[in-house]
Image (cartoon, rainbow, N blue to C red; front, side, top):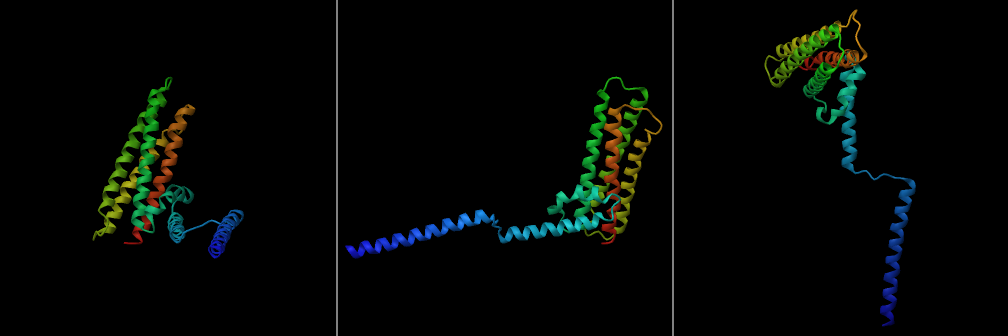
Amino acid sequence: MEAAARSWRRSSSSHSLFQFFIFSLAILLLMLNVPTVSASETTNKASRKTYKSFIKKACNSATYPSDCYKSLSKYASAIKTDPEKLYRVSLFVTIKAARKTSFSISTLWRLKGLSRTERAIVRDCASTISYAIDEMKQSLTVMANIQGADHKSELIENIRTWIAAALTDEGTCTDEFDGQKVSYEVNKNIKKTVLNLSKLTSNCLALLNTLSNRS
């Protein structure tokens, strides 16, 4: 009986020491603030770094590199290091911005007190941005057929034509402001947003080189 008690005390003591060790280790880790990172998390971090480096390198050839990287880096996991995916995402981002710009312009019709000049600008810009969206959609349609195509270089030139036309339409809108007196609201909702859209479109045009170099 006494031997059993001694055995139980030794077992209990060992268990207590083990618990104390685990507790002490946990406290030490907290004090040192050591993060526990799995191998898969480390691999994912390394992959994301590679993807973002690819995007940054591609954006260095864009007209507005910082705007390019800012608009595309958030999609790094989808783009990876694929030039075609990079361009599809670039088109997607630009079309999304164009639709947002179109909505911003359409809200101006509800403003009271617009001058005749301002109403003309709103009307003309609504039309030209609508044309630009259609042209970018045409580019997206062509892009859908580019993978594995024998006449890839021809398709790339078709995309270039559509995007260049969209950029021209955006420029036509901003040209409307030359020499005209317009209110702050009109300037903010049209000129500023269209200029930002033009940057994305210009980058989209420049990024075509990533496809041309691959074809």
